[in-house]
Image 1 (cartoon, rainbow, N blue to C red):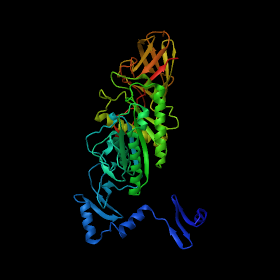
Image 2 (tube, rainbow, N blue to C red):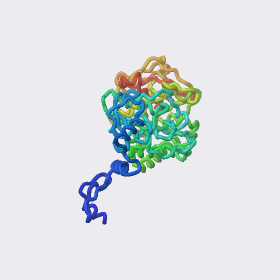
Image 3 (spheres, helix red, strand yellow):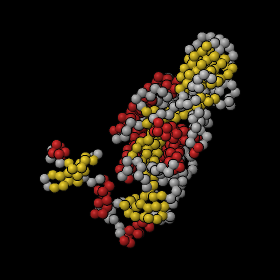
Length: 467
């Protein structure tokens, strides 16, 4: 039958094609994968148990679980239970052949994928707060991935986490917010992949990207197995300190090429254009690349054709000598990432305060900022608040830093000297002599959800020529 004739004979059209049509022999119906699996279960192979056999199957699958209202739904046992975690008593499901119990939800499965260097493959050794909602592909690697050592298998099954990564804390924060709002709780698939790449070329061609794309495919296939839609919520990029020597232009173009490659490959798998999430890396004590600061500052507003969100700056986050986060810092950054995503999903924006232009008149440097709301200066770092000014190779003494009384989105940096010799550079939250990050005390008046604790939206580091 020709395509034209088939179209004319369609009675009901679905997204995947004709759902009900007819031809010369009679009615033609296209069945969903779930119905086909259910028929296969009932007719051959996994014969559906009934009577005492069904009771035995339920007892085996749900042994030691405080459950009720259990029944067979195709190849799945669905039931209600009271299980560990903050999700409360609710519905769950488990495959009749075994595997990990997962929450029964009607929302899409949300994917949170991470990519970068080994310092990001860290985990908090505690139980997940939502152990049946925050999951990983069933390949025994958990949420931290394979570290570039091997390729993960293709799988459509999910498993519980054995550790909690920064991406998992992001998922927990989103679930906590929805839980308190009595909103539906989706399933999450989390996975962070890394390798030892020290350049964008190596990363794009290396095992971490390949493994990340396998995780994305496993996310898609898990949705087919569970008969649920999937949504790739974000891809978190953590690749900056891995490159000690790189120019600003090379870093910016490298990030764009990386996002170009990931976007093309993810869209081949059927996902929408991804949202990329990153933190502004401020360096570690004893070492900082000023070009890296400049490149990330530019990427915070010039993202090309990509949806790149800079969630926060890391200058107020404690790290070890290798740039690795502690447990509390991972929790905090996970919560900030969740706040950024929620704002972006709701309002289409998330604006971390950014110093944009520095102009001088006499001893006063006026700094214009991009900010969503009003600027706030905390007074815990004497009078400099994390600012410094260099001129003629010398650091100039700052007399005061204050909000412009005539413009709540601008700052006035007053020097003790009325003159600046030659080129002058304004630094914020980074050491002018490249000795490491400095804690900045400029933020906006954004207030987080009380559920997330004491968070602040601190301004991004900046290195600006003073005009």
